[in-house]
Image (cartoon, rainbow, N blue to C red; front, top):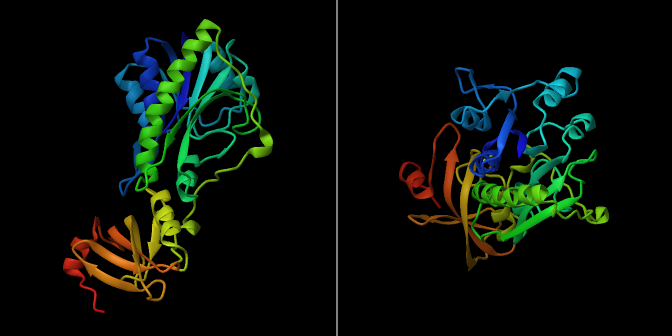
Length: 306
């Protein structure tokens, strides 16, 4: 099938790679413009662009899709199908309607739950035990189109959003492969979403970062895991200065100490009392101006006096 692919981050690479491996003709790849990165502000291509270049696929990086030039570009590529995976921009209807088979999206949630920009993070933040991917027809309203195929998976007790993203990227690629085959064969189903049951997963912000130790150990664990790799949960109860938390463990141990108190610190990590009387163990962190490291390594240079 002749496919125009639109995507930007690592999550989208798995879907594009699968389309290539399945032998489809990728008539073009649209991705976000290169952005300056690190201290040198060197322009850096998106992960999708990097992969597309290794496969000699034609890459286009329009600043906006809401103009006549972008519409003419899509028409000139003459796709049978548009596939979108975390592209990062809303597509105008005139572009969505170009291909005869329509435009479909790889979305990392079980729609109608978690429409929006950060469905994986919010599934972890909210303590969900299951999530998945949905392949849907794109519509004017964000993530509200009819669903073609869904695949579900359990969320691991210690799994963070970054690890879950990698798994869902592969699950999404598999679902996309099956969907494109069904579209080619004319057997694809089309199920309207129950819009009354929809929830949103808005963009993340640093306002979500500060840890409130009066919450339960499980809630704080979900916060830490859900905010990986950005913006990360932060706390100042360990050293008096704000630091990022990258990994924690629910020990199940009880404590009578006040929430936010450090109750133990050693080779296994830094134990902190939570609001439900349980202990949460910090096992990986990053002090301000420092590098990400294990809590044990941090304690070697910063012993905690209790």
